[in-house]
Amino acid sequence: MFPSAREYLREKLKTALDKLGIQLDGIDLTFDKPKNEQFGDFATNIAMLIAKKVGKAPREIAGEIVANLDIEPELIEKVEVAGPGFINFKLTPKFYIRRIYEILNQGENFGRLTIGKGKKANVEFVSANPTGPLTVGHGRNAVLGDTIANILEWVGYDVTREYYFNNAGRQMKILADSIRLRYLELLGEKIDYPEEYYQGEYIKDIAKMLLEEYGDSLKNESDLRIFKEKGESVIFDDIKKTLERLGIKFDVFYNEDWLYEKKIWDVVSELEKLGYVYEKDGAKWFMATKLGGEQDKVLVKSTGEPTYRLPDIAYHIEKFKRGFDLIIDVFGADHIAEYPDVLRALDALGYDISKVKVLIYQFVTIVKDGEVVKMSTRKANYITLDELIDEVTPDVVRFFFLNRSRDAHLNFDLNLAKKQSEENPVYYLQYAHARIASILRFAKDSGIKVEKIDSANIELLREKEEVDLAKLLGEFPDVVEVAYLSLEPLKIINYLNEVAEAFHRFYHRHRVVNSSDMDLTFARLSLCLATKIVIANGLKILGISRPEKM
RNA sequence: GCGCCCGUAGCUCAACGGAUAGAGCAACGGCCUUCUAAGCCGUGGGUUGCAGGUUCGAGUCCUGCCGGGCGCGCCA
Image 1 (cartoon, rainbow, N blue to C red):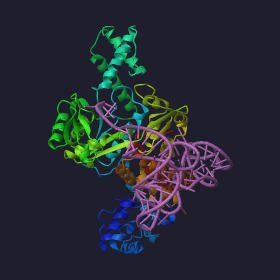
Image 2 (image 1 turned 30 degrees about the vertical axis):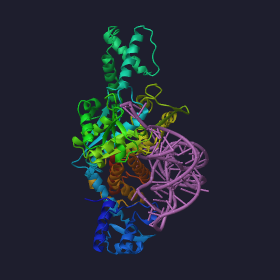
Image 3 (image 1 turned 90 degrees about the vertical axis):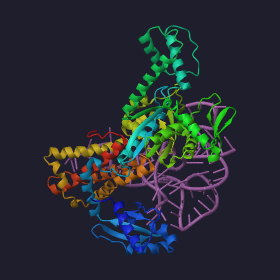
Image 4 (image 1 turned 45 degrees about the vertical axis):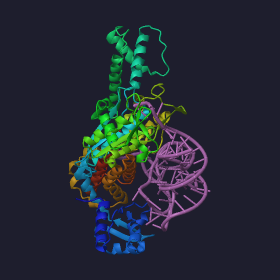
């Protein structure tokens, strides 16, 4: 077992701190990669962080720590105290190079961690009601949620991907009636189609299907049920197909309706018991102000119907009861005001809300022909996710949505996205992968026994570009951990870009397959293979394909 | 009016509180008789919206202002 540099250095430092009798309690022992190479490969600021506690100058403590370090000269090239009290480490090429063994041995499992082993996570995302096709806006949610689920799987969680929907509300009634009116139109009736009804073409398509199936027998049908059911099933099938094109598959579709019979009323009575509910104007109010909220909120309307937040609370209780250790909700910025009240209620009811992580991502703005397109499902002036996938590719769509932090608005210039498809950054990563595949093919075709790569003498890798690349590759598990801690897939993209860059540079300067030096050829092939493994594993997490040829 | 997010190169965006703020695109100049040029090397481009504060150190944290987005319902 060859640990990553951070793991290795952490152990060394902990031992040194122990010898000095210094407790960390809560202070993070972390390692930065200095931008400037003169400061070594890794630096820690621990001496500065503990200075106050210990009551000594940072540089002095740093010196003491270094003096107590067990330095293996084979693996650690240099340690020094610098600047205000950084401890800088430079490890030997051997340290980095031997990690290639680790990568080759672990293969497609390299980067998998055990942080979440034995724990269950639930990721709820998309959760669009079946009133129309998914839009580009839903796309960001879908790709983000799915990739976060992938990350959780990589760190060991047993993950459930869940889609929460409502097929009973007012919007569904409007959908049903929209279909009914379009159906009557098809029968030649003159209809005054309300402006607030769904305007999309797909409504007419569904009406057509009903016409083909039932002829004119629904002409006088006043019960909306048949229109609603047809609409729901057609639209849901469509949504599922779209998601599948992006490689997204849900484990559970949870119907909000399942909560209405009993579970939401249990919530009301529990909250009443705890004294967080009062009646006013015939409605039941939740005392959010008593729990730090800005204003109290209605739980049950004077009509006796629940407001949306009541099933939201009941739904989260269900997730707790189903035994999840980590509950993730992926919401758009328009839901920002919703969740604090839900969390307050859960907290009041005694649930551990630190298990709930609400991830809010900022909106997608669509710019088409230089103009911002205002999106509205009802008005049908949206661009569907399907159209987007048609215009570019699933890989580009996924990459585009992931290549921004959650908090950044996503400015999606449609014209540019199409135009860019030949020079999109996603190809930079895929190209590196394909290039390596090509080298391996070439080696094989040249009669080299590629399967013997494992026994290569990798100590022959001494060039700067080789060591730099190996150094990066070894960090992959650390990057997966960071992506998990921040729940930001972007961290993986940024890292893969560095890997691809380091590989291209290595490739450009050094010949891999060279019949006059087979030992070096094998060593370099092993480096190539390790690179391919890391890029492939990273792309797998992102849900992006790994072409052998481009 | 209140809450949340954003403001970084011409454009789109990065940067666990760390040392000289980085990529891609766009602009300009080089590199293919050898394993994929969807690549590599180089040049130009910045008061990180403004003003204070916290500390060894701030693009990052705090306060106030300016600008943009999203919310603030007995709608979901």
